[in-house]
Image (cartoon, rainbow, N blue to C red; front, top):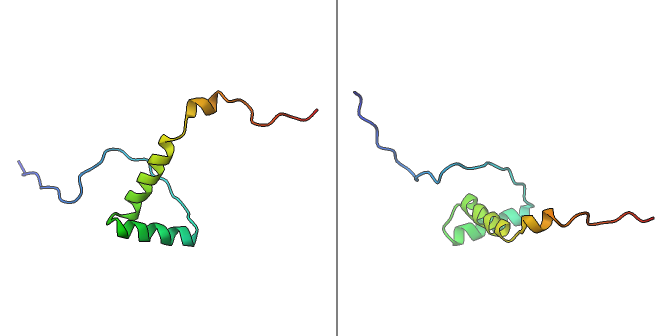
Length: 73
């Protein structure tokens, strides 16, 4: 039996959903600068920002809100 090779690198954080995000040049520059200052990858920083923002959204309230605009008679 062949011995298992030891894996190197960062351990898996589980299944992920991949998105492509297009930022303005100034926002992209700012994101990279912030990531560098925090010694993070920009991908990890984006994940944190999006996760925090999504946790503030009350989907139940939005689903039960109904139409935002009514038609004028």
